Amino acid sequence: MEFNWYDLASSPKAGTILNLQLNADGKLIYGGWGGNYDKAPVGKTTIPLNKWTHIAVTWGPNGTKLYVNGQVDAYSEANAWPAFSGTVFAYLNHWGRNDLGFVDEFHVSKVARTDEEIRSHANIQPMESVIFDDQFEGQKLGSDWVISPGRGSYSLTDNPGYLRYIIDAYQTGRTASVRPDQYGNFYAKSLWLVRPFSGDMWILKTAITYNIRPAAPTNNRNMPFVIRAPGDDGAVMVYIYRGAGVHDGNPAENQMSLSVGSNTKQILLPQSPNLLPIDRWYFEIERNKDYVAIRASTGGDDSTFEYELEYTFPPGSFGNEQEIEIQGNGWRGSNNPPGYVDFDFIKVVGNPSTVKPPIVKPPTVLENLPVEKIEGVGKVIAEKLKKQGIKKVKDLASSDVLALYKKINIPQFKFHEIKRKAELALDVKIEKALFGNILQMQLGDIITMPDEELGRKANQPIEIISDLKKDISTLLVSLDNAVVKAMTLESVAFSDR
Image (tube, rainbow, N blue to C red; front, side, top):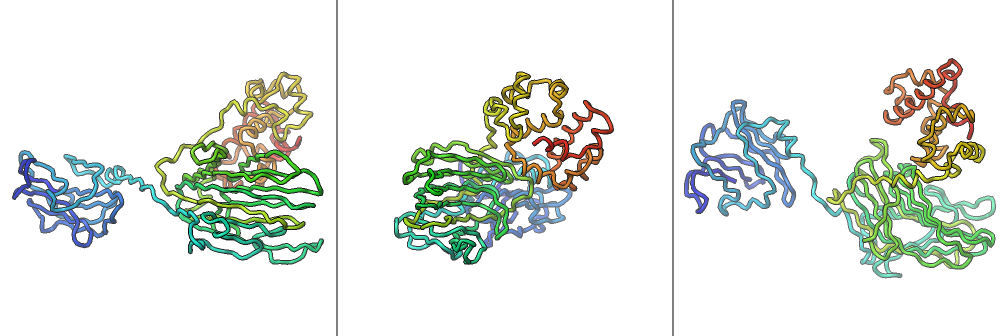
């Protein structure tokens, strides 16, 4: 790039007062004609090829600086100023003498911008990149896959173009050694296929054909597809479970279970005592920092994805590294005929340009949920609510909570929790684990403890602690007496479950 005194119609033979280009080492150099050019800085960073880079130069009484992606790359105390005078033309490609590549933006300021301004303007959005794309067209898995031996097998040749996992394992565990249980059946570790990858903004797509058939008289099989933090004890981010089974001649279990964090959705497929049909699923899993979502399709391709569920993890739950894990297992009985699952492809695109914002389920789904369907309410409470004209969650949300408390003698705090439980679909055990460290604290002590201190004690984000204290405050305002203040969180929140 150069600035020149000549016109726009021809290659200038002279008059260059500024140029910014790369030297043979791929580093920024700044030169031209004006003052202090013998003291101009030379860049220290090699500019990468085929990647967007934000570069800038400033000069003034405080010196001359070269910037790469918003950071000062080189500095000189001298003011290396170009001799601007009259009309000046900018030549982005130096009239063919330098191949600059692509230019997305070009800005010239009348003042030297500060470090903060340049850093803010750079804000480089990383380009979309394919992290990996396994089409399973070869004769063996790529070297990025880690094979952990165990019961079961895999093949790329039984059904060319697919990764076939053949399920042949009894009750399994990731680190369990082979040993018989009390029934004489082997407690065996199954074969694990593990594929690590990096990034905290990505979309994974895969197509999976399930042929999981139970073997009589009593047997089930399943295929988990898991994304978790690395290591045996790594936290689970996504868990997709497809299972089928027959128990002592009863109709087959036939279900799909999707989990993101503690958010779980079961999809019950038609029950049948016969062999189950082969079914094909497409999944799209998106991670955007702490937000993770699953979309699925059974429409024959990946263009009809429908939102299934999502979860936003507490900040810092996962770093930049995670791994895919594939395994299959069974429970007792015969393993004939063996079940199998075919993976058509697994593709992960990093920094996707199509990252979607979090999707929230339509409120009408929750508003129309019958009160007896709310986990933890119970039949007795549901009948009392119905007598008060509250048949659905939307009726509860619009009701006079304090009046209901007085009529049916249910703590007001409980109503707030019922509404929150319906909205977040949390299990009672999960809630108890959530507040485990403060369950025995008195309400009066909880409400007076600073949010930060209570958050540290409960090991929970400030947002959750803030919501909890709001609910308790509402209860104490309505029933402000020493007896209520002395009640523990566990006695109020979980006593009638």
